[in-house]
Length: 326
Ligand SMILES: [Zn+2]
Ligand SMILES: [Zn+2]
Ligand SMILES: [Zn+2]
Image (tube, rainbow, N blue to C red; front, side, top):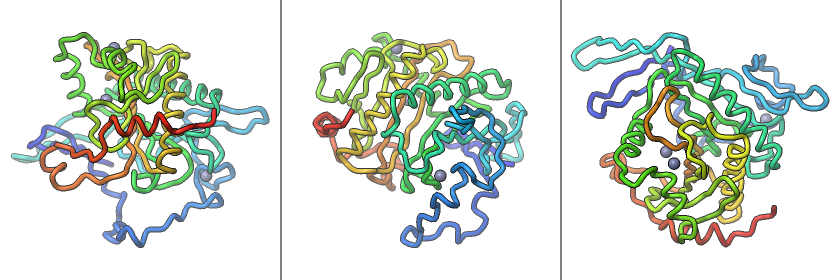
């Protein structure tokens, strides 16, 4: 069972998952790591010997699955208890890491990346995502759901098969609390609505469609960072219309296609940010896309101040000029 431990210096929770790295040799030097997951032994490919029971499954024409959500084999969060904080010592504040940790397998195909999906596939994917968010919101101990996609080893993906993860947490994480405070602090209405308007024809604009827009934000902290925003103001992803959800999915796919065209099949982290389930204050859900091109080092970790070596204006210009097949 994982534990939450409170970093008293930052006020942020840390999750300690004791059984994931059993031996210190699990941290082999990078040069020795090899990509071992071929289609034949991939646990997410159809026909895998792994007997995962789906929490969500969409079937296709011939009774074959099109996408599925299964429990993570190595959950960082697990169990139904609500957050019970205990003091084990003078500086030892902990709680059980209850919640849920799911793997979202996007398709049975091992090699078809997110940037290659059709509009219909994206619509199905976003609809499935919405159902999982709704299911989490109706689970009493889950306070916040984090949906992520890690692509590539450098971005933390341990399997090549296109998939995402859904983590239902028993607390609202620090990053979201900070964004909530920023929304409250901002005097000009909604930060995201204002960004959509301000960047519509700026040099940081990358692409848009009827309901969504992608920009390299003015405050990009790393090269080619993207912010993908629904144009309609909704706090929760689950409040968005099906059209808006699909449009955001398509803007994500197109942003990835522009990145691939510009930089190749790079590693990235894709992160959905939405208001906590029972939040009533100001918030506007959105998506961060962080290509993994550089590594945060001592200065960044020590200060929280990121050094970005590519300006968002340069990045956006390069992404705009990439021609992508429709
Ligand atoms: Zn596979
Ligand atoms: Zn807004
Ligand atoms: Zn955010």
